[in-house]
Amino acid sequence: MSKSILELAKHLDSAAINADAVPQISIDQELSIADAYKVQVASIDQRLAREEELLGYKMGFTSKAKMEQMGVHELIWGRLTSNMELKDGDALELSKYVHPRAEPEVAFRISQDIPGALTEADIPNYVDAVCVAIEIIDSRYKNFKFSLEDVIADNCSSTGYVLGEWLTAENKFDSLSISLKVNGEAVQSGSTDDILGNPWNSFLEATRIFKREGIELKKGMVLLAGAATPAVFLKAGDEVKATCDGMGEVGLLVK
Image (cartoon, rainbow, N blue to C red; front, side, top):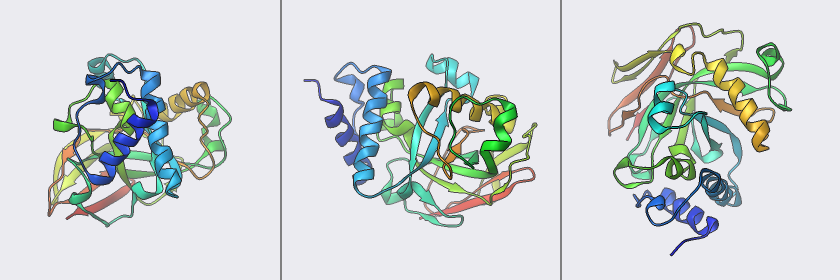
């Protein structure tokens, strides 16, 4: 029996609250990409009703290889809320997650409301700071298996993020090394080039997509540009740090 958008949203919200792994929702009913985003919005609305705040967005599938693998031709996106934000050096409690992983990323801070699709020349007027970041992804689906529609409905697996020190937005991000370290060892390494050729491309593409979808990027919001490397599973006792050339590092402890 098919469930409504709201029923699916409440189902995924409950799974997130209770750290429960649930079956893919696409197994029991057809779900279009448009429907999946409606589920995502309705699920986030449950959080906002609990007085969480919408603080920004994350972009996904910023690797062209990942796009081809999933059979899509543009980025996907999820939402960042206040309860998802961790501070540099905070502890991440495994009991609150199903099977969390970490990815090294770059984040942008929006300096004024963005009216629509921007060009490269517009960037200085709308982004006032950048930083290295860690995104925590944690699919609510059993065995970390999902379809495109499933992952979109599940907020694109986004469950947490940590921001490093904000720096001026003059960085061109030309082939900067970026890595994820666990207990001092670089377990994943890549380049800012791995984020859609350059993280700024992800930002500009987000403004184009959001204009089409009627999504507002407002002053003070954060935009995560997308992962520069594959994600790393987290386990108790891990000290996790993301580093990027010239941008310092940011970290968390896993308990």
